[in-house]
Image 1: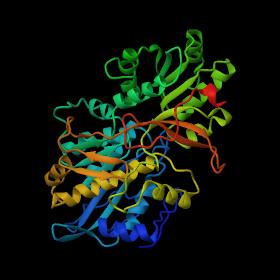
Image 2 (image 1 turned 60 degrees about the vertical axis):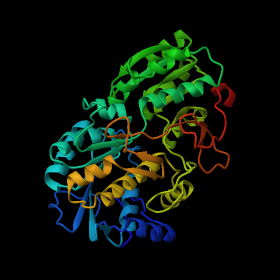
Image 3 (image 1 turned 180 degrees about the vertical axis):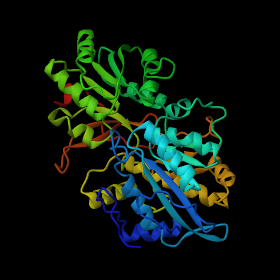
Length: 439
């Protein structure tokens, strides 16, 4: 198979060692380009996988590694997928939801009704929301990730005791993030006043919820919330939030916001001479770009840790370690590693494992049952749907991280793991520190 480039120009290359190891483990052929639309239903010798991601739009950083990962799976898939004594080739249909829920519904319907995949993978919360109902109705097994399980489940009015007929999700929960945030804050001295602001989407509403949100972890630990509520995604002025936090004397700023939102807030905070001791915001600092945009004032901001190259696991498909996958990304793209690399890769690990365990990848009930009974260790760690206390959900670990100025100078900042209480297998790089200690 030739080495093609995805539409963002990223090279989809695997090392020879990883390719040989992975071809044996995977045994799959991906026979189409990227993206692919309106393809007739795959015949009995072809497994068709649909993929939905945020490849453009506001959440494009979440999907930045998706095309590269799909390209790697294509190159890896050279010999067909052996299941039940039969060899299947593999096609991939990629849909970009543009980071919009309405578009997610549209491409989800297109995918299920027109492309008729045997399995759908999604690395975007709204992508999973959009395709889930129609996939369940049409008996198309779906595996998603990269969004708190509460937002995924309750966003569709699901019941933790029942789950969904054909939809599955693996990720940690809002509660895990909240506990990690508080664990980091408890390690330093502050006045325990927390100014919060949340974006108005499924994730932000989950984070701000009185029942399951940040306050449920902060309150019992003695923290006082100064909440400014939800803000619309097109908001470009956070002066009212800055004023509220400054007037309250909040040492800590937290909540959930995308990087463009926090960059605006941070600039306005500087103009108002508001200098909190801690800035721990979900989503905003997941990626290098979200910190680099802050310039010299990016050091010390903190976030949840989904995955870093230091996670002590290997890929079940390629045998690669975290450092090897991260190096491959940087070698291929010239860019710094970013957290979605791990979950993008793990999504394919979970999907391929389920197809192989089903015994018949063309039978949606068999694939569904295989997912429900899956227990696999991936590059991000264990993914266990079997016997999960939350139906249709496999819980994964989460750590706490803090961005520090890079020592080697290749990239401006690097992410240090500073809390592992909910991810005990994760090695600490340093202790959590206040912003004033790092300036």
